Length: 208
Image (tube, rainbow, N blue to C red; front, side, top):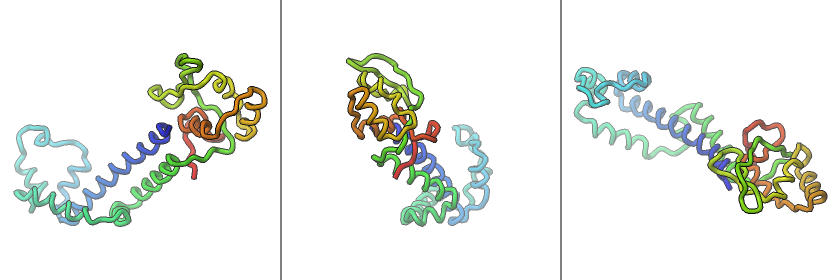
């Protein structure tokens, strides 16, 4: 049920993890006074031949490790001792405004993930029917790997979600089609990207 919303939240989570790891690595280098060589190497993003199983460049190796040469295990232990006691509030301070902004986006995505609220007005998203399943259809919206099995009467009533209020759409479906659509089912269709709030464009709304 939460697949579409989880996709949104997990994408932000992975971005946050990368940014936090990167910024904490830089902070450890600064706190342990390793110099600038390692920072330059990190920022270049290009691995050195010695990292790919080639011949070790001893001069570069000494430049990178500085005073920690020969004490590499101690260096990583020192990093762990610096990072382990940090609270999340302290992590945000250390990592700076970009991580704070990303963390805020992640919190919004989590609110959306756990929300059961229904937008006041809904409209259909792009979708396709990929096949027949029993007495209904296999409907694909946000992902071809996560179809929604939908009874035929409900599939034929989807066009009622045309921007009118959600309450009016449900009343019209019941009055004209004789189909009573439960609010939990509406929320599920929002989760799967089949319906979206009016004004949104292929993005699931963040709801509180």
